[in-house]
Length: 136
Image (cartoon, rainbow, N blue to C red; front, top):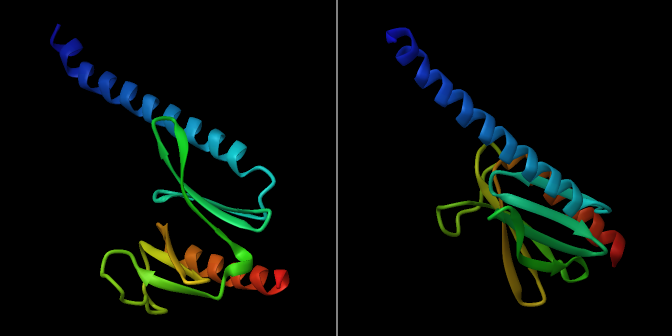
């Protein structure tokens, strides 16, 4: 009986990890469907974003679905800035890593897209500016 009580917490951990793995797999499958046909797409801890048909859209994963937060037409894009996520209006330095946001500016509109990784955000920034120049 004592041996059974010792193994019970391990069984609970196994069930928990299995459930979390199933949820992550479901999220990734929904993302693949959501991002199908996109020119540029990303999924990370801060949400999902895609560039499709000249429109940048980003969403968060809530209640088993991607909920669209906002969108931005790439033809209106004038400037992309890499900003710190939580320190107000501070731009991110080239050496900085971690969470950040891309600020999309155009036609009097400023919208922030969160990223979990600064390196990926830098790549997106370069690709978005290249696409914006091609679409002009």
